[in-house]
Length: 221
Length: 261
Ligand SMILES: Nc1ncnc2c1ncn2[C@@H]1O[C@H](COP(=O)(O)OP(=O)(O)OP(=O)(O)O)[C@@H](O)[C@H]1O
Ligand SMILES: [Mg+2]
Image 1: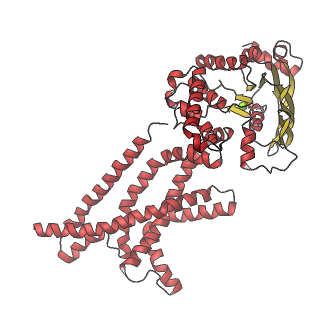
Image 2: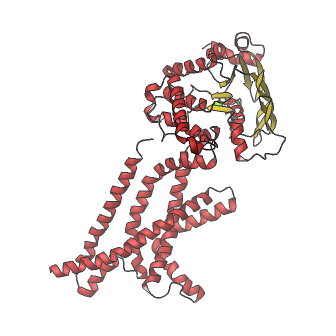
């Protein structure tokens, strides 16, 4: 029995690496992309703004699971060429693409709120003091934006941890997939339930981190 | 001698004309008060002076040099525009202090950023920053805030915040300091401390343009008054004369609302 416990732990930890890969890569790509989308959605160029509003609507309006299927299977159907390849790397790549697009859309709405939430008077006060546009952005508005954006972003990022479990629908062996596999392979269900511990630890660490950042930024209002 | 000369300024927002042919001039060391009912264009006029709005017509000159001319194409690069802006300082109705900086940092920030453009900045960095800090502290002390320098804006009362904002506007030594209803956002018991500071600036011959609803303050402190209505300068002249003995019917009506309490 103890050997079983350690072998479950080992395979779940291995799967956790892939869970973490999805998580980290999604953040790395979705944050800059979300920032770009938020700029686009505030653009004075109306066609660009409408296009981006449409994209954001589609990605926020359909299930992430469906988007995973579409991203993974559509290239094969349309191009008669599975650009993702047949191996596990391809599945991981498709997952990261779908997650990044989906989360970039959510982030863009948050960033836009953060940017528009900084009162115009802040920018104007900088302007009349002879500051350049970039000085105003970096010295005045950026930190105020970050402060506004941290609470909603921490919500989204915690949701992302749990959303990684969706990747199993296209065969990525992440944490939930690995736990589920024990039902078929060994006829035991507790490893699936036991994955909760890993998710809770993951989210617990993030919560501590976000609380720390919020406290660091609480010196001003 | 006129330090500021505003000629035939007009400004539209869409189809509404907010400023119609506004002209005035102001002598160095004098204080001009702008009065008028809500929506008459007072804020818009100040914002035009500070390049926060672009007039559709007219010219603005400082020290006999035209710094804005609506008939010329706006070819200014950012650097020139910034230089021109520095002729004016602005104190906003809602203070607009930078919340993430202390009182002293608010006052020093613009000067520190500007110092980076000095050719001797790299060699004398330490000394330049020390001078800026000394200047900032002196300004805050002048505002009666010597013991509040390290407070963040949210730790200060409205009156204290507005005095920090005045120090911040003075830091770059503008030729003309503009105030847009500097006490309107304050509790009545806090207006006095801000008006006192502005009064002492007037006594020290700071050139100022003040939009205000405080009639007795305008009468006592200003040299000149402009009364605006519907985007037009209805009456202008010596402060005491305009308040005590207005010539235009609209000015009389406006002022009677204040004297009757
Ligand atoms: N950005 C803008 N877009 C459209 N209309 C504007 C804009 N700014 C001001 N206005 C209009 O211009 C007119 C003058 O406004 P302004 O703020 O200059 O008046 P004011 O004399 O400062 O009034 P108050 O005493 O209430 O501050 C008002 O009718 C206002 O609605
Ligand atoms: Mg106003």
